[in-house]
Length: 228
Ligand SMILES: Nc1nc2c(ncn2[C@@H]2O[C@H](COP(=O)(O)OP(=O)(O)O)[C@@H](O)[C@H]2O)c(=O)[nH]1
Ligand SMILES: [Mg+2]
Image (cartoon, rainbow, N blue to C red; front, side):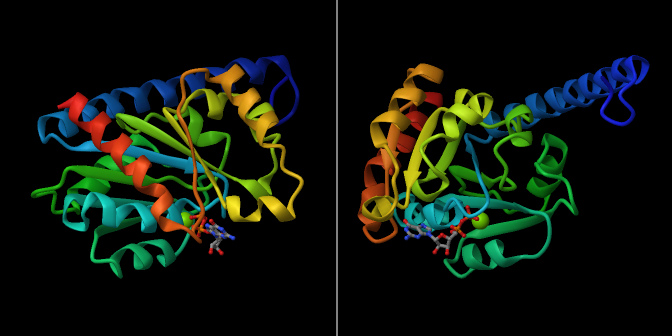
């Protein structure tokens, strides 16, 4: 059925349009990826729900990778709250406002790159719009996709949003300081994840112990060296 009126005729048009949008995005994503490889920049797409702790994770990670090695693209519907948080750490940052769109795309990222001084940059982190559905299907040209999932969102997120969790190269479970206060079944969460994405490494962090991101930083460094 079509999304608008439920008719079969429209269904075909909608599917064709979606396919074209995704095809166009894939072409641009491949261009972005070629650009990053040429510049030896390791690009990482950070996805997850609104409020899952994406920006906090970046704040913890940055000191371990070196602020001068990093550039950030912040994606939000409106405003510059997150880019201000990044700039206050002295990191080169550009903000994209999607004005209602629920995900970034490769085209938006290619324009954002033009605004960044990439001299000496080894890592580009793109914080996607908070959403567990739409960003799944839009390759940005990244080498690595990190999914951020937080304890208060519940242990059922992988079961409810399998395409997103299947698309990741690394999962960060955030806010583990809240485990004693919330009925979150860690084993259930991890079992479902390993069923959906068996080879994805999982790291647990909390902003109460920022040093917990050190193994994550090491894993990112290792991955980026393997790509060079
Ligand atoms: N208790 C707790 N709160 C956290 C943690 N990480 C982030 N938060 C809080 O969660 C909220 C959303 O975090 P933010 O990083 O802005 O999420 P984003 O929207 O995914 O970028 C903020 O109030 C953070 O202070 C954590 O490890 N533990
Ligand atoms: Mg954020």
